[in-house]
Length: 367
Image (cartoon, rainbow, N blue to C red; front, top):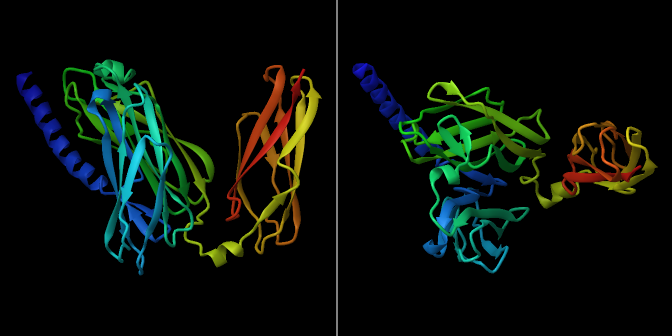
């Protein structure tokens, strides 16, 4: 028995070393923006901090991967609680610049999520960087900080977010997990959705300690719009009863387009984005139709339509040529809807550089 325990501990130690190496490589993953610049990250998560820690500082490093100098024109913060500094001189090809932020950490014991909007030369749209964390007034136990159990592992929430992803690219984010047991916890994953990868570092997670869970969603050519990716954690060889879900929204790839190419794209103009069905009885099928004209210079394509009500469906037009009209027919099964105001949102993912995401609203009153 003793030899078996020693052997298991040796194996876990070797595994931890190997995963540390893999995790170090993963930590260098970059976020490319429009083929112009490459950020070491677009989200910095401070995790759990104390108000007594005072101001928190982080730095985003940007590499110029284009063939000409790049300038960070301006960086705007989402509130006065965050100060920012950035490289003012032009960043030459192959060189790096930085954007540094200091969060005052004096807004009380709450979660915080602050945005930095960077305007960079030759990048078609602003780059959004985020700083996140949770400030606490007093020290909390691991069990209090990570209340959702996955066998020996604790986590704050099973629902994770990865944001918007362009086709042909990937996006990563991080969460923190904790080993709430008295021994090491080796973590792996099964039933992982296509396009999702997850790593834990260090792994095994030492007893009474935390580890970084890094998840990456890679856009797949046949997946569009709003999607949930799933994975089941396996802790010390035993599948957990819970499942991790990662939300991501995949759009067409527009960041590489020049202004001239954008001007040549499709451009849908809808007669209205809201259709009212009036008063109807619960269980009645609500029908709506939205007409549009393609005033752009290329065919307009709807890659996918997502609804926020499960019992809704749509009839979509095919490719709509430049100068032509089309319509979208939506039907909503109102069975199970509560009485009162009805609002169902349909989200279109399109090939239009000017309108990559279009929201349509079906409204009414359930009697």
